Amino acid sequence: MCQFGDESKIIKKHQILENEALIGWRNNIVTNPFNDEKKFLKALNNDYIYPKKELATGLGLESNNSLGIYNYNNYNYNNYYYNYNNYNYNNNNNNNYNNYNYNYYYNYNNYNYNYYNYNNNYNYYYIQVKTLHHGKIFEYSEGYRSEYCKITHLVILDKDSKWFSDKNTIKFANHFNSLVENLAKEYNCEVMEFSKRI
Image (cartoon, rainbow, N blue to C red):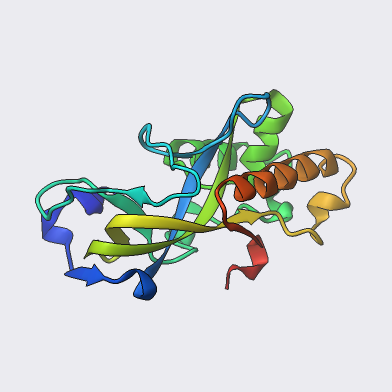
């Protein structure tokens, strides 16, 4: 998302009504998944906490600053380069250390890394989020920097996937989906299985 703070990378400026909002995709962190503290969606690269049951705002954005809510315009952004599709159970194996490492450093949504976090009690999960954007928006080749953002869906593991039939992963899978489904209620949004994003 580094291009989103670069004025020379802006393709177009929009003023979008809420009923014509643009679809975006974002990876976030779910805070406190393994304790009784309140859970929130948090930005990956800064300390921004998404508010519950209200719009996220990036007021004050201009072409020459980096303010605003950043989201990609495609659910599989940078798939080729970053091996994004790690919701897939088949990537869950003992040879996946480099995959964990790669996604950790590049902050990409990696459900195998979530499984690792579950087993090692690291206190966060990665999650993909679907969003809608309106107000003042700057468009880039990879996505948008917007004035207003509404979370519409949180992405969960496919319920008919091997995550739920493998005795070694079913406890994690149930914990993750249950946590995300409860969090969706708090954010007044829906859940969506990974394979249903298309």
